[in-house]
Length: 283
Image (cartoon, rainbow, N blue to C red; front, side, top):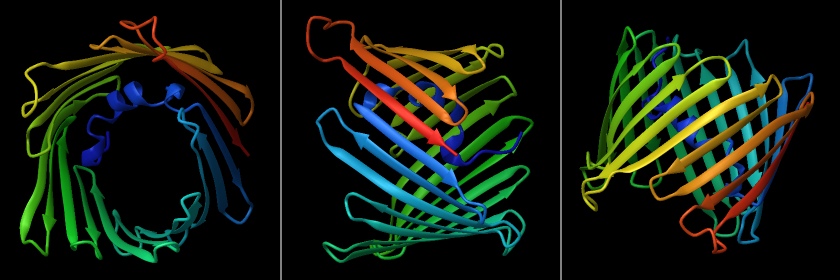
């Protein structure tokens, strides 16, 4: 198995606990299309429970022989962003990114430069914000026979000081994984576990503890069950009694529908519950 990035050491458990729960927005629409000349378009729209609507359009051009990817996006906040990626062009396993943003309303500009370097037993990344600070965030993960260990740190060049640091350890096997992370200056701890029981059932759990603010441990458990090749259901609940369920089905090739809801089981008589839907079209 390949070594993941630092942010993905607990990815399997985090995806099970967070992805495909559609109650977070009242409605979500996503349309994806690809052209014969390697240009991919994606349009997303989202309506929040506060009746705020947002959206974005993205175009991505990929030249595989050159390892070049150019992405241009524009959203309803009138923010423009361009990303240029070079993958394996400068060196084997090295990806370089340049990200440039512009907000016409305020004339604010952003410029970032990122590096990703991946080898069989190593995955390192460096993120540089050239106009704010400037700042640098660096992380690295080493792995051997499924065992993973990583760390990250942030540095503000103008202040000449380390602004953040985190660490993580984990173990990944084909059907299960476990990870322990310590973030926010090693004060926020999280332990997660993921298990693919069989081709139909997945289960996972995550416990968190903030040593700065509380002596209690937060717990969240989730499960996914694939009903058939075209549909699945998910459910989760946390230690505060908030439960969520979701259902996703492929209506026809390239058309997916999702519906989900969350309930506060300790306040069933109050209007604190949420329902959301999602449509995805791919061509």
